[in-house]
Structure formats: structure tokens, C-alpha cells
Length: 153
Image (cartoon, rainbow, N blue to C red; front, side, top):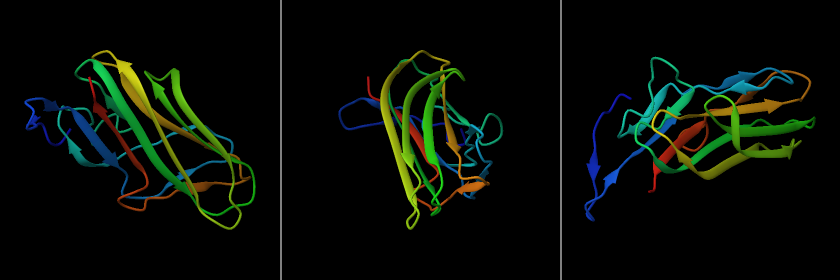
């Protein structure tokens, strides 16, 4: 990550966390599972994210139980479903949210889970839409195209 610091809270613990985002919309092709990338960091206290390589992942450099979340938004569209997944090590889906398209409103999706990660395990966000054409995952800072995790134990 771009900020390699350890923060000590008043209780004597450390903050091991990162929150990252993409500063631009990401076009998602029709009926294609796609990993989201994140080009910017709000913070990163444990080299969890890189803005120069593997920008699609958050890596647990410290083993433990993590609270992991993602927030995305799709533009109004009346066709198909919208899916968002959290996936560990490129193969294990640990959380998923599926909903129908919203014809008159933006489709907001937030997904979170609590998961035990070994040092070196990484988490990625994958999305899918089947509107019949490409749709953007829209960047609306600071609440969409946001991805993060915090070590809780």
C-alpha cells in the first residue's frame, strides 16, 4: 500500500485495515464475471493493497479474522440481474449478493462478511450483470466503488 503505518488505538491494540476505491467508472461487459480494480487508497495500515500491481485485491499480511466489505452502484436499467461476490484466493466465494435490475433507480449493492484469513490470503471483488450490453460500475466517491477490510481478531 501507499501508506505503510501501524496505528495504535487508545486500548493498546493496533489498527490493521485498508479502504480502497476506484476514482473512475468501470465498464462491465454483458454476461461476464469481472474483477473490480481499485486505483486509490483512503488508507492502508498493513500493506494490504497496492495501487501499482494486483490492484484488484486486498491481502491479509497479518493472519486473523477480518470484516470485509464492498459497495457498488449500477445505473438504472430494466433488464437482468446484478451480482457482486467476495472471493478468497481467486477461487472460494465467501459472500454473494444478487438482485434484479432497477428500471427507474440506481441499483446499490453493499456486501459484507466476517472471514478467517491466513497471512498471504487475498480477497477480490467480482461482479456480473446481464443487461444485454455493457454497464458501468459507477464511481461516486466516497460511497461506491469502495472495498475494504479490517482485522477484528
